[in-house]
Length: 371
Image 1 (cartoon, rainbow, N blue to C red):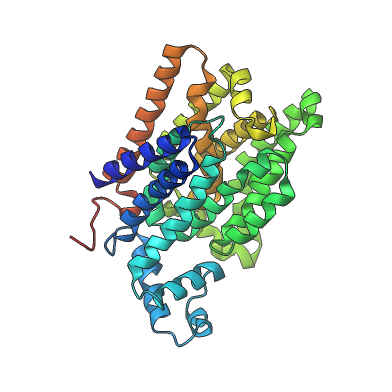
Image 2: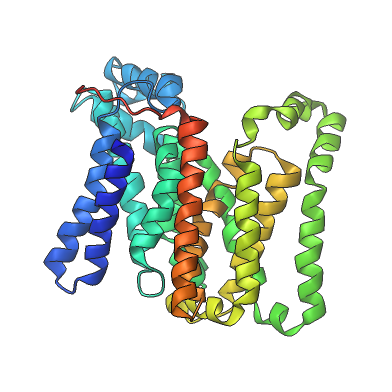
């Protein structure tokens, strides 16, 4: 399997980068770790990744045959950053596969930088393993949102350190590749601010009200959207999205079970988890954000089911850190090894079930332009 070989080589290089103290070795291993999956993505044949058909090739053809960038923008009305990248690559290198390579380069580089920032508390190769098995194949499909998501992830450490203003440029830049990145101001910044505030921590009843009130309100989201869409003529045309099966991920129930297990681990090993997830900010309240983020994702997947892949993408991307950190919640050596093996097994099963058996994102089997 070419995917598995790519994952193993790249993960091994990330391990070498995380263990070395030589800057030259770190740079070389990190560069190769990033480039190998980028090259694989760049060499894929047309049709490997659903969106290569929906907008990948059409946008590349439009960019190649447009007399100017303004002319291309009149045809391709997608995000400005994505459009500029597509237009520049097509008018210099002239191949859609170079576009796919550069889309991958932005996605994987930004995610790797974000992961590398967490290497002191969470195993870098473990973070990369979880991401490869959960998200790599989706980068062949949701190309624009994956670029935006990786930019958001690269700056997520600023949220952990409560440097919210420093995080906003990442959001701004990410929206140039996918407008949905703006939602992270609510889902990540506002959620983190509320759930980690000292006031909430010290006032138990306020904490209960915020936590369960928000969860309860979320349960009514679908009903509220349906009522609003039915009452407001301008919104009525969107009501069919509530029952659109495209909005539901094939592995929703399985992903919900994984998240439920994470919540249990965060509860049973709260003290160790708080130390692991504090990051460089030394804010042990970060665990409250991660736990509520899981509850939010869980309820949204099971009861709201509205644009799951778009709304929850950024929250699930952040959740990679919890999954990768779980073995470090446990102090006992043999049980820690058991937790690590369990996480890897579940992630591997998830990849096989969703991307191989279910052919989500239309990336299986891999086909290359050179074969």
